[in-house]
Image 1 (cartoon, each protein chain N blue to C red):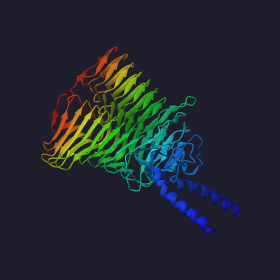
Image 2: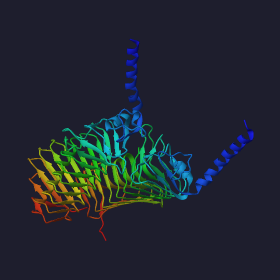
Image 3: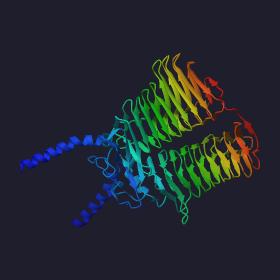
Image 4: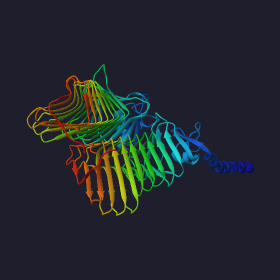
Amino acid sequence: MNRPVACKAFALVIASLLLSPYAHAQLFRAYIASHGADTNPCTVAAPCRLLPAALNAIQDGGEIWILDSANFNSGTVTISKNVSILAVPGQVGSIVAINGGNAINVNANLTVSLKNVSITSNVTSPGADGIDMTTGKVSVQDSVISVPGYAVYVGGAGSLSLHNTVVRDGFYGVWVTAGGRADVSHSKFANLAYGLYVESTAASVTSFAHVQDSEFSQAGYALMANTSVAGATSRLTVHNSSVSGGIYGIQAVSSASGANAIASVGNTQVSGVEFAGLFQSGTSSAVLQSMGNNQVVNNNPNTAGTITPVGGL
Amino acid sequence: MKRVASCFALSVAASLLPLCANAQSFRAYVASYGSDSNPGCSVTAPCRLLPAALNAIGSGGEVWMLDSANFNTGTVNVNKNANILAVPGQVGSIVAVASSPAISLGAALSLSLRNVAIVNNATNPGTDGVVMSTGTLSVDDSLIAVNGSGILDDGAGIVSVHNATFRGGTTGIWARGGASVAVSRSKFFNTSYAVYVEGSTPGVITVASVHDSAFSKYYIGAGAVATVSSATAKITVLGSTFSEGTYGVVSQSNTSGAIAVASVGSSQAFANATAGFFQFAGGATFESLGNNLVRGNANNAVGVITPVSGL
């Protein structure tokens, strides 16, 4: 045994272990691939294998490119810096919810974008939610989310933008609470207990959700604004969209006087719903505004509670 | 004797082992270069055909088609909950062949199809695309072009079709026996009965909704047709186009007590050879929201069109 050589080698290993995080921290763009290894520097020539390694490798505000079709996590991916994650078009960037955990947790006050990803649950060891966020801004585009829990949970005054995405075969679709905001466009929600749910449970807190050009089919509760506390407000607008099948269509629910739940609906189709198409319930602080150009047919009944006509401008 | 016994044991073990190993897989892979003898249909050793991959996954698992090829040789019987997708950029072909459907979905099961192309084998033609009775089917970003029905939902099944193209064939989506169908952002071209809701079971309601879709070159674009007393067929249409066919949107009752309802809003019908909007017989109701553009048809409206106001 040549001790000096061994010591030198040891020192080199330590140095490389210490240096590598700093080297990776400078990357603007990190790459992952099915043929990658997390011991690689996450470059395009030597990609990493899993998302956590790539997240470690990028600087704040950097990008991660998924280069080929595979699964890119083995447990919850916790995002703790601003990042854009995308799968290269033509590939399936799979991220699974597994072992009772969520697929992705986004820490507070971050700006995160996901494009062309497929978030599903590992059926042999099922997970919970797709994306959990509180504050910050998260955009999801051109993606699929199908998990047993919440597809996206907005649990704080953050903003979610969901565009051209399919949310299906789960329990909750998009759930917005605690002053969160969600805008949903060109998306499809199918086979969910709750499609899009916006609530507020604290006085002086307003949660918002806006839906445009989207379709909801076979939901227990397709779209709902629900407020339970006086002084709290949940606000839902739905335009140029479709609700079909399922049990409840579009609802405004207030369970306390002064608990404001307002749903506004225009140029939207609600049909084949087992119970109410448009449904205002609870106290008079629940308001369901209809623009008068909605096609609400073949529901049982088409409306329940008070529907407030509002004109277009 | 010993050798025979051990050979037998080995062959039994070999036949059992792959099954046991495969039963736990969440995701199975098929590829043009795969082989069905590959255990577990892994990404590095994919299988060749869908039945092998379906055997390999647990209920609710996924099958990925890794490259462009055809992935069946006969009807694919789906007998567990499954999600089948072709990797984007690839053509995941499933053919209807030998007078049979491409896919048969077992009762009360859930199947999602994404980025697949279900077509007819012209040299040995098949019948339908997907046949189902109960259960749940989601089809996204796909093409269905077969001789028979693109999707036949012949029971209380639930169908969601989004961003799909249906071409040719007798029927695009045929719903009956209590089916519930939702169609959005889809195109139906050169299909005799594009979305056809049939009320043929007494006491049972079959429904379909259509949003933001385009229909051309059909005999019936979107039809609710009730053929049996006390059976009900309903279709609602919003934001869609019906052009260059024979009948655009139809509500038809073929016998007394058979109930058909079509409701149409924010849509257009033009250049239809017989009628843009068509209502036939007393059990049929055709509701129009009054904001449809129905022009340039041989008859813009035939039968009784009932104006309904929006809400």
